[in-house]
Image 1 (tube, rainbow, N blue to C red):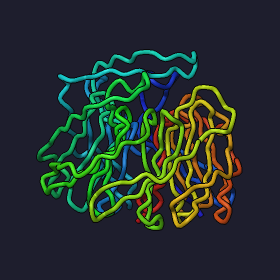
Image 2 (cartoon, helix red, strand yellow; image 1 turned 45 degrees about the vertical axis):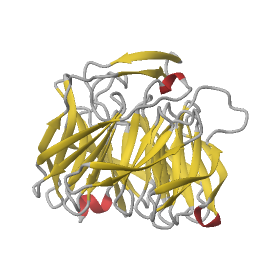
Image 3 (cartoon, helix red, strand yellow; image 1 turned 30 degrees about the vertical axis):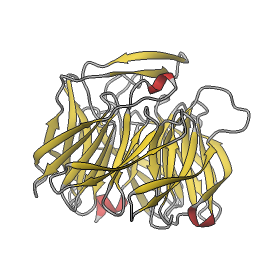
Image 4 (cartoon, one colour; image 1 turned 180 degrees about the vertical axis):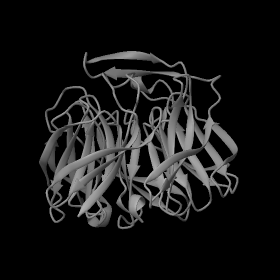
Length: 381
């Protein structure tokens, strides 16, 4: 059997040295051999560092830049028969507000102030049912929404700036890092700098109305969250700044969140720099996975009490620098992880019964190592 993943990242050298990436790629994993057998360019694009797809209409919503001078979002059409992809719509953001933020250099092990010459979102989510697009803008501290027509062309857009900051230096502003729909149709947002999760009602024209705000612990820095149909309205929140995974419960009746517990993503005694980056829940809802940049590892949690609590069962090195993102294969037997700062991929075999990972293919050279998304059905149905 073959499983396929979409892989994307920066095409410039700004964040990844000696970068030769050209856009979004398809990585094919032979699940019998336990190997990545080929990596092919799907579409040439400038800096597709994050994207999500619509299985219903075979569209990819991506962030992108243009001529290294402006940033925005785009829609890609993918033909599952010919495997051809093309950019069919784009919308560049208002560049009068650019922003800046404190970043970390994983080679020199130093923080630096990143002054941006243009702004671009950091996360994007596509609602194919209602033809709406949502994006999180880290450097201008805002949520962006768009209404699309039936052909995925941009109609209207809205921008929602968010205020707030946390106690850590990297939390100098709200720094919105994540936004996606909950199963009930509301939008949930991670404000990394403000230590908050926000829940919104979404109107037909993609306008937002705030329903609730949930404060995380001070200094947590919520970056992303994960959930699935088996987690009984429990959400798993990846805290980048605090290097922890939190469990919160969502009440669809009221649109509010409540705190349950949180767990360290790092081994006991580790004192070096770390920023957690990606999080996934296995399809059966029994295991949670998170990545650590700094400790350069994946942590594995077993889900307990019908989703309410976690137990750390494994920490495994990714044998590269700064694992940014990863995803599980379609049948859950493999996990593909991208090491952003060492420009390589690592393939793990996964035991679906125990959740444990074993490295089977390491240091596979590749430059687009920011976004990893399982896409077998998307590319073949």
